[in-house]
Image 1: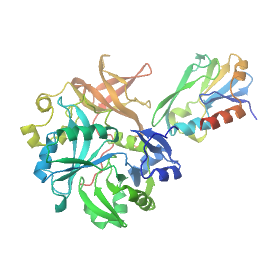
Image 2: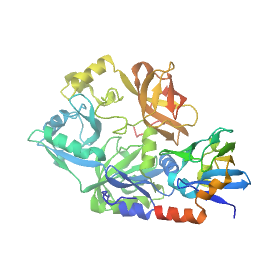
Image 3: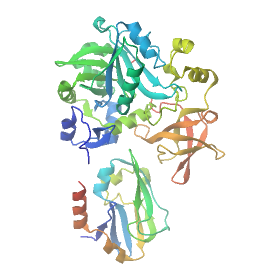
Image 4: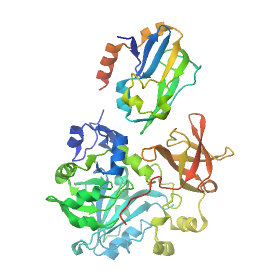
Length: 375
Length: 126
């Protein structure tokens, strides 16, 4: 495997020692799976707790003089209500281009610590961080600076038992709300913990300085409930959870409304606009879109992968699969894709072109596996 | 030792008796693919040419084509894989076989890798 010119995370030696299969992803050498395999890692995440190294994700702080200044600066780039983001809370949003297409999707959090007033903490996709940081830097007012954190790692502990593991070290995090942000100590390691993830399960993402990341990894992996999981399980888990993967389910052409992400555009922003592409997006919210992202359940066992053409019952081309594969918890093939809005209603029969044959499929509600977030 | 041969695409073919041979994927292949979740098999009676796409094996991550290691007619398929494709991972040379063909020309197998040559081949890949 030619991984020589790839970046590595601070956990890389641990992945190799565990016998992980390493693959290139977004310029990094990362574990796609450990010896147990993707199915076992996926199931362990749904039943217990899995530890993921997601240090390739881009972390950064937006720093301004006060919350209002920083929030308004970010609101010029995203459609979420950032001004109304309470201290200690996190929100999902998208960086938009002038056409309302998605430059990237990201998490934004605001610390509850008064000494962090005017700061917002961002997590963006690995493959997009250079694009995002350049875009933000170009669009920020002089009073607000973007400070990337290449020296920070990110570990995700995901699954129904993640809270038991975390609370053993940091009891206060047991009561942390979904999409909450708090500082904590795991052992003697300082972390910034959010109750979030990319699996549909309860769990935490822990931001840590790079030189303590391996120690944090060891500490958590030593707990009896915890096993490592790689990018393969991360992808099958997020697909079952109906979560978008940037560059596949969303890109610079898709709007948040088409992508089914309108829930992330809060009321005040719908009323006031003032974000890139707001004319298109407000019109789509009012009048609907030509196409929509939907969940698709193929009949039988054949997976319908990304790029699979979708036809309606008359054989007309109506869309394309953007993420598709095998859902280990569903125990069958699952897919997401865009179809013309006439075909987006739950229950609509579709035809999926797989290797020259038509596989029957049906539009189903997302997610495929119910979310188990802490409420 | 039965006569087993390999392709550079990691299919194996093993002569059962005279004219009929069993086709599957090597242990190296199943390990590289990871968990197999779906196998599409050829129809019985289909006549395959050596190198022709004959089946598809899908892991969680991706779909891969299986090529006929030799020419011949498909005389049996392993329908157990439809219900439980994981057998390919558990027992690739035994219960995880894909299909059987009646060889058109057993001489074609001489062009494939024998056990020793295949072992060298996958060692060089690593």
